[in-house]
Length: 206
Image (cartoon, rainbow, N blue to C red; front, top):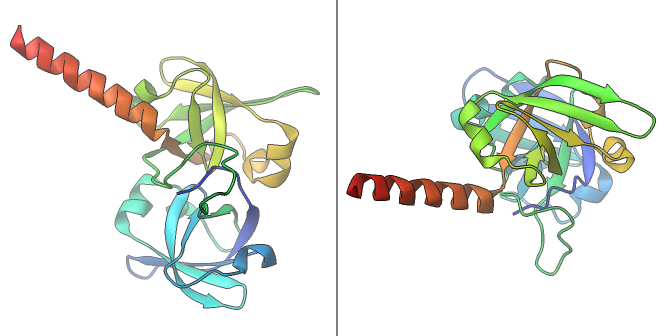
């Protein structure tokens, strides 16, 4: 499990896309390599990946077909920077919200509003069915960042970014047309799906 509090930014230093699974190698900051072992889970841009190899500060991961299809990792190249979070440990503070690292879709940045006091990003989700899980003031994971949903419409939602988030993550460098990884709050998803199933069952009884 993860918290959505990005711990560092890392560079992709090697990409092998000859066959699926793809192999990505990332150079981690010194503070994030400590006690990292083969088989450990690391969240990269919101995707939970398993450590396959460690060579000094360079850590390799395999990306399977499902990950490549639902996330933006398929489009990343050498030199790109990604958000990093190590798996949360028991008794550690959860500053954001619990995240699994299971990306379900992507969302396109369709508008950026900057001012002296605000930085607002508007996203249009690729899978419109995802919008039923997105509520104003609810949790959402965007490229591994725990954020609070602002305003929403039929297919678009926005988030408001504070200076610290812009400083510690890659989100402030993204341009219009960028597709970010989206993870829905699991509790919200469970409630929505349960209510839908109950309503469907009731309808079938009538």
